[in-house]
Length: 215
Length: 324
Image (tube, rainbow over all chains, first blue to last red; front, side, top):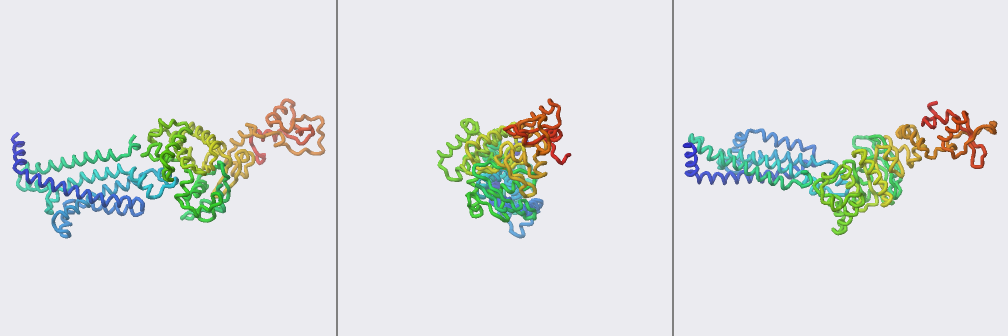
């Protein structure tokens, strides 16, 4: 009970720091996902039409994903210096793979019979993309975005090491000062944020899933 | 009318899928392309709506070379039904059927009416089915939608690529019957690819038998059964079917199998049958009269030929001369 009281006190006394860090964290994660989507969706659509090069692009993002996150932040500092940009670049790199791979899988997974029927009926390539391939692969894309989002919210705690702020600041200060309450005050919002994003995106995913394919 | 003039298709890897093929599909006819897998029947069909390009030769529709037509425009005027059905699962039945009319820019009132009419035509109550999604329908119902979707844009030509082969036997029979009936009313020119001889014999006005990219025979179903052009066609029809065709007695009369009457033969005290007697009846007479040879007479009663017992047995058994 005493520990809980200490925790509450910590939140109260550090509320400015926690609030500021939460907003930074939100901003970093959100912007990173937005840019990653902006890169991965068009790229995924593009490589679904060039299957020979597809594995190459997906391979690159997979290799980037294997770099330990702490190391990646470290690598980027000499190149980009410290600050929000470095953090963003690292987060974007991490978010690329799930979105790219799911977009590619979603589009190439559309039943060939449906595409052939569309083509045979005289739909143009553009109509096939917009009226058949994209609607049918939307649930896959959303699943990729969800995975990337949860991942990004977690990894964004490392932004503190390149001076970009975020809830990692709170956690790091707690660790340095042997203050477990402060660590929790940083970690719990991260977890909540991940859960909240996941929940919201799950609703969106449900919403965009075409009615006819969920019977 | 669709005409193939010396059409050849060579794929990039060098395989000749279709080799110098020429034939004509007359307007309002249902022509089936049939043959074992890899014989080029599907390739031949897909060249009509340019899903596959021609290597050399020419295909014309009503005299116009399709090479000069816009792909998309051409396809909107040719109905297309495929084995995998290919309904768009995220669209309602109504939207699926109205797809081509919409692409062609019809008015809403026009295509909505068309959808209702077509659903009625295949016995699916429009008010129940048009707002449903494809996956809510059975396989047979889905392919009915597949067929009327191909009809919706009122194309004069329809291509069907093994449309019923993935269905259960009962649905398949039903859809074949419906297609036959439909064809009587709508008189479309239909090119129908199948590997199922029973299906081809049942629905076709004309059958094109293909093998290794070439055409072995073009004939009506009954011509094909009675006069297969060569051993391949014969074996593809199968002895079983040839036999059935004989048993069913289609024009298998005494005069069709009789031999020439030797001029020296004294016929006056031999048993006779008229030339229109079915061969089963000839066999019955032979058994009753206990004779090995019977004389066939024409309508005036004059002897015109004779039938021997062994020969008759071969005919009834569906075994040809080479067995002897």
